[in-house]
Length: 267
Image (cartoon, rainbow, N blue to C red):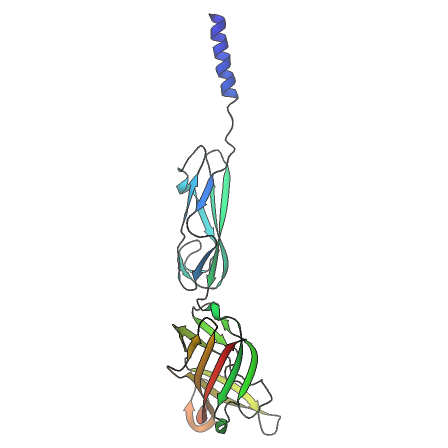
């Protein structure tokens, strides 16, 4: 009988001593898409994740730590409106009671909603030559780009073509921007200071230009194979003692104005 009890005791001791240590890390399952694409200036809210462990089960859910490098209007690793386009990463990390740790990364791509139009274009510019504001111009291969901080804001790199009386130079061009609203492009009034060659070809003289889109005339004719029709007015001002003061301390008078039509066709 004593021998039997000894065998039972040793067997239990052996079984306890041979119990396997937990070496399996928890498994993290992401909610939502990975990679995930969201609109610029939209609200970033983490879709979250779930966790499962061979010993601790789903009890580790509240133990998940989340860190991200998304640029938002708000504290780090929190929710907020996205500030800048780009590719970012959200890292989920959890550790079980045995010290096994695992992590999963979600890729988040913040895009300008109008990025589908970011390509090369051929541009034709037509204007009233009598005004001598903009020369008729054909420009091959212009890149339309989009603002990295404001959704639906697009940059037209050479809007205005060859301004003034110099038909052989692209130096005096106006880089302006527009906003996409549905199938329309809104070009708000913008002011530019440009120095031009004076008559003696040595000195430069300042001119002020204002560009304003014509409401209802700027639109996207084809959104599949992009075709833009852009209409705007360029007003040219020169310094005059009887003009209107500006913020730089000069007085200006308007002495030329011209309507411009630009057609942008995918290159």
